[in-house]
Length: 364
Image (cartoon, rainbow, N blue to C red; front, side):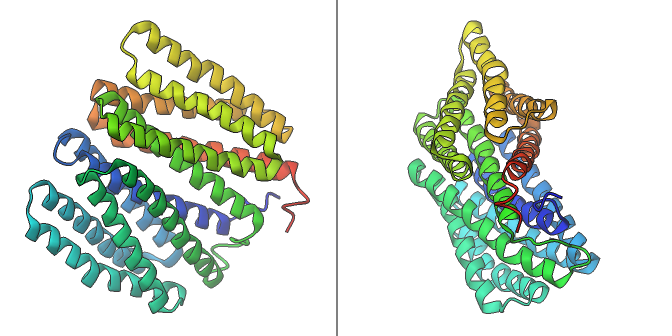
């Protein structure tokens, strides 16, 4: 049995991914506020969908009453962040200040108490973590209106990583409290690998579509910062592969994914038919073949399922870029989530193959 495949592992992985996605949804929604109204609305829908999924996860763990209470608290938090953004867009200092005051005075203590009750973690510990997370999420919005894009993407990566730490603290406590619902060890080395691979690959998926958004709209300063953050995330995944299979494997991963990143940007910014087709060929042909071979060589496993998952993720990302190029904003948020979901499928397949290859290492 795969030690990373258990109900407890599913809980931790899913919680981390949804909390991380929430950070990205806030970043994308606030980025579009003011100047890209259709895109703004699409990412508001994404923010709502993320909250709904978190509520259902809470329901599966804690029941209907807790889920209802969570939804009330979490939805209020989203409203506060949206109102803060609107306040900045409209230069309404009172609205912005009021939203932040509500986050600190209402959301932080309410959510901290909710989590303390659910996990038995001391409320003071949780409150400090939640308070810091809210301030750093606010910083993402502030960076966009400064604008300071280098700092923005550094802060996105910082807050995204912090969201995973919150999930990592909560999930084991919930699994321990409800072992019948969540059997398995949520903190084993195998689950650590699954969580890390999923979180980093989700981060890559969302940063990629932020970079292509900037490329399609000619937002050059933001594009440069987004590409830098995308490269840093690629390096982080490469480091993960290097830790599993050696430095040369990590280097090879970086080479393959750097070429993929370049092809995505080329497709997003293509101004001629031949340039567009060349980038498509790199993505759907060269990259899919190279990365399939890379995983096969690294893990000694090859399957049509893996290649199909790689191809599906590439095509889902292309659909997002097409939305951006054609300004089909109504579909953008949903397609962005779909591309991310396909990355989760791919990450789990890679982790399963890696654990099978390194059974002794991940037996515990």
